[in-house]
Amino acid sequence: MRQLRVIALALTVGLLVAGFTSAATAAVKDGGDFYTPPANMPKKAPGTIIRSTPITAPLGAKAWKVLYHSRAVDGRDIAVSGVVVVPTSAAPKGGRPVVTWAHGTTGMGDQCAPSKQADAASAIPYVKQLVDAGYVVTATDYEGLGTPGVHPYLVGESEGRSVLDAARAARALSGPGAGDRVLVAGHSQGGQSALFAGELASSYSPELDVLGVVAAAPAADVEHILPLAAAINGGAGYLAMGIQGFHAAYPDADPAAVLSADAETKSEAATNQCSDDVMAAFQGVSGPEVLAHDPLSIPTIQSLLHANSAGNRPAGAPVLIVQGTADTTIPKVLTDAFATKACAAGDTVDYRAYAGSTHTTVINAAQDDVVQWLKDRVAGKPAPTTCS
Image 1: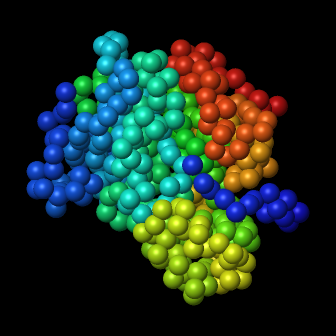
Image 2 (image 1 turned 90 degrees about the vertical axis):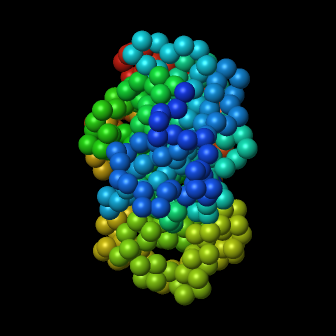
């Protein structure tokens, strides 16, 4: 209990803020929205391209917005959107390494999908450095962001599949020359997503050779992050999104069993909004005004939160964790605890803290270290570890 109180004090208002193939078409044939899959879409292998269209790319690259097949946690074939960025230089024999990026919290509304930004390709962290190194870069929007259905926010199983299937989609495009060597990276919510992609890869996408996973300020332990959020002024917005996200993936996870009546009403609206609006709606609301019951006291929900917390199975690849010491969104104490857990499980973990960096600025602060670490994994160098 003492440790949980320390963690709760550390948490603050902001809890989880930041050639085509023949199947790909540049336009939607039925005149509909790019993100809406064809009616009666036939089931195809995860990563199969549904459609794609060129978008503005960084210098020295070309890029596409893509819609691809993936799988929901219940096994349904679903459409997920994202971006693929490819160097314009000739691909080497054996194909290029693929870096699949997992973004941080943007919200649950379709308008919050990162691929809908005008500069979607250039906005991916480290994309220019990775393209210059000769890598393909792909970035998923996740299930339900942009595409039909509610986004399963913080459901690691869903996020990890979307991340891995984005790498498959990059390989499915005929032009990129993407190989089977894959690196995974993500920030905040995306840190959780990246960790899950590493854990799932051997069973979900065994054809992909995952060389390493980078998790920046990861929302790794949702089993404790979400319940504690209710006690923090403003953090309840993330709890509301999380409960609705779990309900989207697991219908038996009833929001009414956790949230107060008023918070449940607000949380339903949160499924159509971006994160800033959700935070504003829950500003000044905390504690009993939000929770009807502690999520950890409800066996079904507690079990789902545990199952979607990273570190309960092998990492699947060496892990680099980067964390800012001035992060008040995912405080360092939480990431310390996850790194200790991963080391105790026998994972190869390189944990680096950046003095004075916040939740957002750690991405830039760690840039050179992250890019070099990824290059070293491609080069086959032994992965360093800070585990004692």
